[in-house]
Image (cartoon, rainbow, N blue to C red; front, side, top):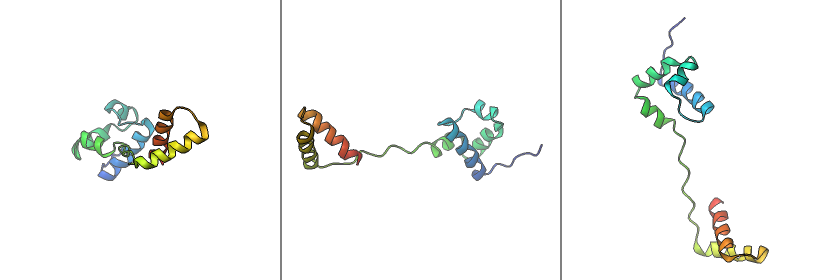
Length: 101
């Protein structure tokens, strides 16, 4: 069997596929089970496993969008007109809707 040559590009390609399958960074044993035992050593030699873990980590969730107080009040007013109900619940719903938009 031919020995595999690991470059940053091949490490990233294989590792990205495994991360997508698992939904998280793999453990060494999981790489070995997939026939990718050399990948762990290659990561160690090319920046270290923690650096690769950080590199392929899921992007952080975006910060909640800033919404003006007046916009929330306006939307809460219209929610109250449409549905009635608790003013606080309408306010919270308006705030969630506007931050998600």
